[in-house]
Image 1 (spheres, helix red, strand yellow):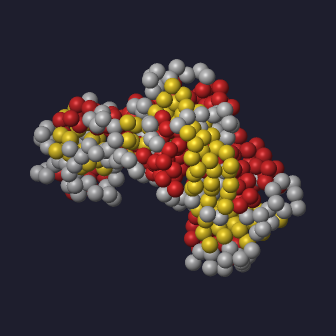
Image 2 (cartoon, helix red, strand yellow):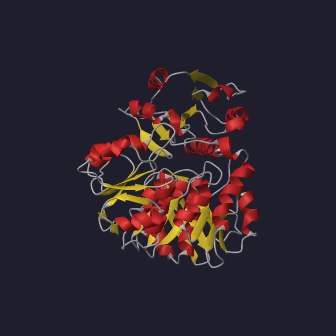
Image 3 (cartoon, rainbow, N blue to C red):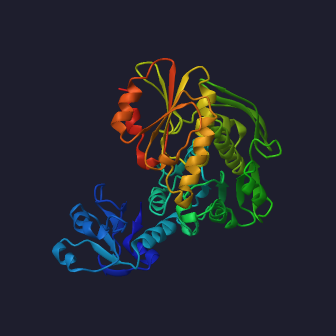
Length: 455
């Protein structure tokens, strides 16, 4: 980062209390556990923390400037080594304002990706393709919110040509702010499903928030939409910007044929306006076909060749805890898809799990689906009915919401209140004829069970 303190003051509309306006800022920090030396420390406030309580530590670690929302006597303790101080109305707002300003200093093309499922994988697939030809920046992990996206933008440098950003939406209005900060020119919506209903209330509420991303595009900018999704199919005909569609539907601009799923991964023929090419991906699951189509359609929108798309997808690495295949010492196969869960991703994971291992005894370890609000009881009950129709050997449930998970079948179903008991039970059943799927919301940390099983 090469930016002056006075630029930080101007971009955040802050009140300059102390410091050297010509001092260079080396980076941005929001956490004193990470490096702070020479950086701008934003004292963010969350539900369970207040960054203002850590400003002294930030100063001791060499922060160049503190961005705070209040002035207190604590600053007196810093003399004579007080860093720069800027007071703003809202430190989170200031973080986003500064990130937007910093992004505007670079002639980078920004691609914004949202959707109920597949955002992270689509982002990584697209970054894998684009980085073959030009330097590309993408969010680390799921840095997809009003803190993570700005922190990603601060990693931009003059070499970057593309910036691929996953944009998460959990509350009304969040996407408006993310659009303001990132100003994407190509926008992707992967699908619309039952996610974050605690705040967005209904699937239509989810759709109305996510569509704002493509509604923000100018006429010469491009929306990339999955037309197998009924909401997005309808939306594709309502936009004033350019639209590229993808899906299994053969009428989509980008679609597949000759799909096959093997132990080495997926294989299919990609059809696009630029031509046809055979693709191989070292990943599993039908939903990854959609992710690959979304990435391919986005790359096509940027003028990337089919050969580069082919190479980029071939070198893509499966993300941790997204249909991650692990073999235990006993020869059992574990499918770790425990990164997160909602009704649609649960169904997809279960369907793919059954298809992948037809000859093995299949055990599904399922946890709560969180952030469903008033729909939690109904959605868990519906998932139970869906799961009952699948050829599963056993179903193990863990969490609180799964008490609503009713399985009207002969499949052995056991509820566990703690991970230790569940781990012991699973360990006793692992052998070379068994496959185990782990799927649940992030807060349940099902991966800890996986870690105990593979040692």
